Amino acid sequence: MPNRPFHRPPAYRAPGGAAAGAGAPRGAGEPVAQRKPRPGTRTAPRTRKARLRVAKADPWSVMKVSFLLSIALGVCTIVASVVLWMVMNAMGIFSSVGGTISEATGSNESNGFDLQSFLSLPRVLIFTSVISVIDVVLMTALATLGSFIYNLSAGFVGGVELTLAEDE
Image (cartoon, rainbow, N blue to C red; front, side):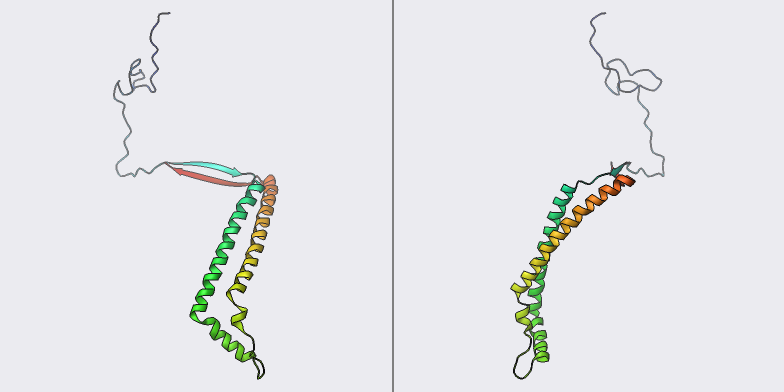
């Protein structure tokens, strides 16, 4: 066998079945006819699709993600309640409603119920923080329990099927 240099075979064959030439670079042979789109038709990008099935949800990762999301929701709840309290206080709602309630519940010897001291900002913050902590614990526990239930039901029915598409 003579020592000849190695030439990679061509990646495609030229029209007519013959190779474009041994060792010739691409496009060195006969011109290759390319398919042109028909006039009047629109060339849309092709979409690749993949069908996937969610067969199992890891309870530990579900617990971590739900814990972080519920903490974010708790912080948003606390900030929203502080902003709402400040707006209502600036508008004078607590003083006007508090005056009406103290007149309605008061008598000659007592002033009645004091709404402004009952709905003070520290008291509202404590109440909102307690509700947020309870919400964090419940949402984390329910999401983790939901992942266990999903894993059990996915074992019977196969899980949720998704179709993912990618535009080229």
